[in-house]
Amino acid sequence: MSIQDVIKKQVTENRVVLYMKGTPDFPQCGFSANAVGILRACGVQEIFTVNVLEEPEIRQGIKEYANWPTIPQLYVGGEFVGGSDIMMEMYKSGELKKVLEKTTA
Image (cartoon, rainbow, N blue to C red):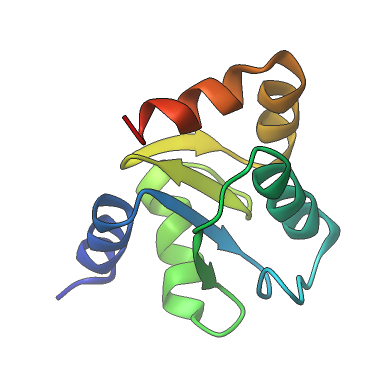
């Protein structure tokens, strides 16, 4: 299985996926900490996270998968949402909560 297949499987088999540096309890960068905080503020209970610091193949592969150069990256319902800045904008506007609620219905 290629790294792209692994990533596709992760994002399609889990409702909310966050590729980040570190873990939700111990984020290793401010952007990852911010992303986790936003998801928790939206009431997300279950987040499938991938610590890209422990998986260098995924760290590079995820940038190619979404054609997005930075980490963290959020996927909801198999769709790429964005990174930390986009998450913050969507959170402030209320759009992120709507996206997250749509996938639970």
